Length: 202
Ligand SMILES: C[S@@+](CC[C@H](N)C(=O)[O-])C[C@H]1O[C@@H](n2cnc3c(N)ncnc32)[C@H](O)[C@@H]1O
Image (tube, rainbow, N blue to C red):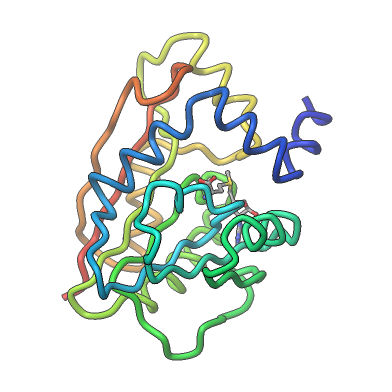
């Protein structure tokens, strides 16, 4: 399992694995139903990985992706040379100065982070949302009654902090109160329930 974790650090292996488990299905759903990009908007993807979400967004999207993995960022730049990518750890540094965005989002990032790191990345993300803009996240979630196979996938995920909906909310409320949570089942080729959180900045 440790070996699999290591090779998933390589962008192309990660992309192949994501395609096999059907992660592209929830990425498409997230882009179409939640990001709902409109011309003129600026969007920020924190923990963008190889930036596969760009496959489901318009070609002329105003997009910035940040990730701490150099390999993922190198691959993202190769695949999407006209988009902006920054290699940084947003729990420790604060890139982008005073720039603000209409939509800031995380896809599958927070379950890799401790509560302290999750709070720090959320604080950074929320500071980058303009007034009237939105913060979105998509994460795997633990629910009572999940089957053995689903629990196996979650227990063996590279992200060691797959939380309950209440736990995600508890950490995010340290940064900002309110927002909605939606639980979605059967969005992948494997049993893996996801939760989408959405907050709008006043
Ligand atoms: C499971 S991957 C998801 C990648 C991408 N969002 C996707 O949907 O394919 C989690 C990503 O979060 C990145 N990440 C984790 N902590 C981070 C941090 N503090 N700052 C920037 N990126 C981070 C990892 O390098 C990794 O690429």
